[in-house]
Image 1 (cartoon, rainbow, N blue to C red):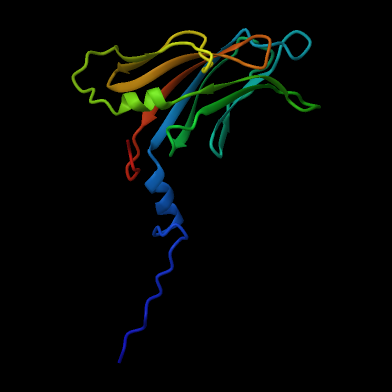
Image 2 (image 1 turned 60 degrees about the vertical axis):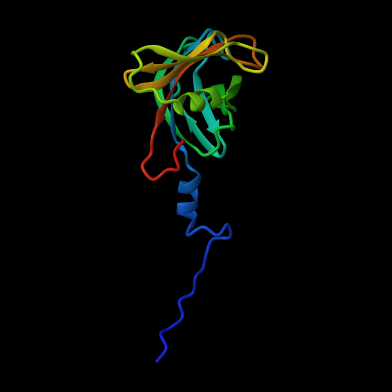
Length: 187
């Protein structure tokens, strides 16, 4: 007696399943610490109620709203999955309004390629605080000042100060950190 034939149904991209497919492309996780805003634009009578929206591809995360503060301190960690290191991280600051649409308070973009490239370098044995690479402010980026990718406490980190675009004033301070993910493609 013949055994029943097993149907082999595959996802259109020929991977075993949609979940496995997304894990195959996943390089790891990017943790963005949104530290603080500096001299953000006033959008209410004397102040603003700012929050930050962080986007990477289809992912969208946001910080909490800080009431009546143009120099807010969030110190919030937002974690995004990274599949394409060429895709920039977009940040937009908004003023929360209760009875109308939230007002935009500027935006910025972060190129994560220099950070990702630094992660690929063998770093074991380097002294704590070693600068791996420096990124200078330029027309092509939103950096307000030089940004260094560092080897610190056994991790690669990057502190960033971004000048907001499409607004009269304001900066955002961030820190990038990488999280290896078991089962991910990795770098």
